[in-house]
Image 1 (cartoon, rainbow, N blue to C red):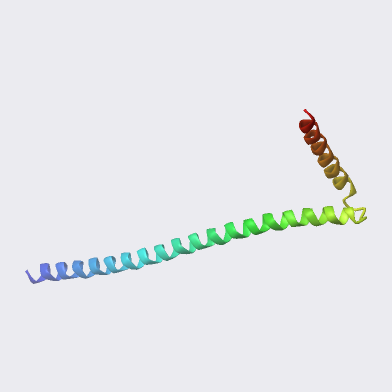
Image 2 (spheres, rainbow, N blue to C red):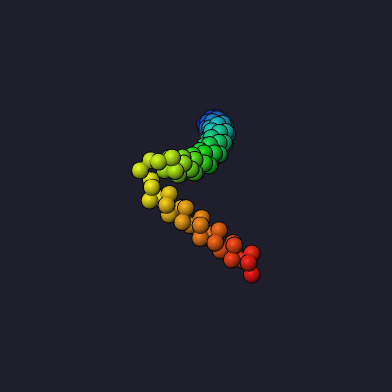
Length: 96
């Protein structure tokens, strides 16, 4: 009987260790999920910032072209022509 109780005690100890390890791993898993969520939030914020900066760059390019720079003249002319067409369309709509 003594050998059987030692085996049972050994199994209980091993089971307790496994339960403790599982609890630690679950806590680490939750911490990693929190970090993932935080990283996703940062990525989203940075993507919005990038989009805003790209719009700002385009605005600056247009302003630079209007001030006489030769770099983006074609794009500026196309943009102006597009705006003129939109204005003409609006005027035509108002005339009707």
